Amino acid sequence: MNAELSRFVVLFDRLVQYTEAWLDRMDPAKLDGWMPIENPSMRFGDRVGRITVKGLIVHTIVGERFWVRNIRDCVAGAEIPVPKDPQTARRVSEGDFRAEAKRIHAENLAALRGFDDEMLAKPVKFVGRDWTGMGLLWGMYAHRAFHVGNIDIYLRQSDVIAPEFFEFNPAQMA
Image (cartoon, rainbow, N blue to C red; front, side, top):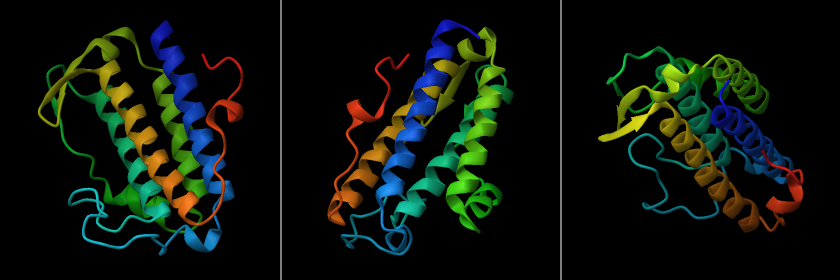
């Protein structure tokens, strides 16, 4: 595994652990069905129309599984579509969504550890932009970080103090 991917895997895994720290503090009754603000602007495009914490986790993990597999399996120059995977969405949504999200994350990490330099340098297109495989992985990281910010707002709106980012993570990140 090259140095950038190795650093990415550490940071990405820590971001997922960081997400769990937020969820650990959330009132379980507010994970699904509760939204602090309900209005027409509280949506993320056509795919995520009702933003609950559980919905954000389902959306995030489905996207991550989709991107990891598409970067690995597509041909150079392929256009990767917007993530849609109803089977994985059901898999995460039904039952213990946090446990299932952790299992899928472990599958993603195993797949990422098998990426080679050719996969990482592979040119791909996503949402009308040109990426390399590694660039899209960093985009995936940013996507999760964005949604952790959303969860942070929900946590604070439920009158709970969020974890401190720089105190939660170890002294050496990667």
